[in-house]
Length: 199
Image (cartoon, one colour):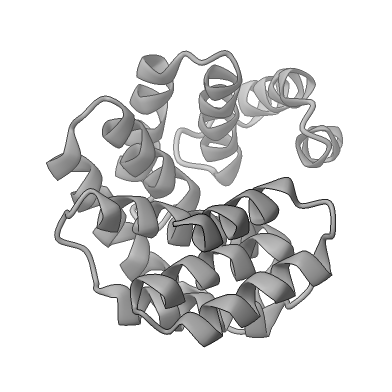
């Protein structure tokens, strides 16, 4: 299907046109294609920084499919951007449940990305002192994602931050070194490491 190939290449406008044509042919409100059209429209709005309209699409998608991790993630993140912390927290908790219920060790690439983005959101909500699972829960999730795919630098960076917040400085330093080893040009790692030693 051309729509899917466009989607995977992030040519969302072309994907949307292709899915729109298919949706017209099928004409069924609750098909997977209809869900894909809504998701594509929402992601296009994200690309255009039109978060309010995107939130409307993602909220609609959650009503159609309460286990749509992408929609749950964006509903949480956009509500957080708008300062609606309680609503963001509600969607975030649903996202964690969705991940725990449906994501296994054989994650697809898309599931892995959503899992990591959920972890990043978890860390942000924790820093805002919202009622999210504690640092040990966050640490366990990060260690799991590193075990699943140890080739990316970013998870090690967040793992280092969590170790340091837990005052386990040796593990924090080791995780920073792993991040640098995975990506020597990872400027955020070097900057954070420098701040760690300067403070």
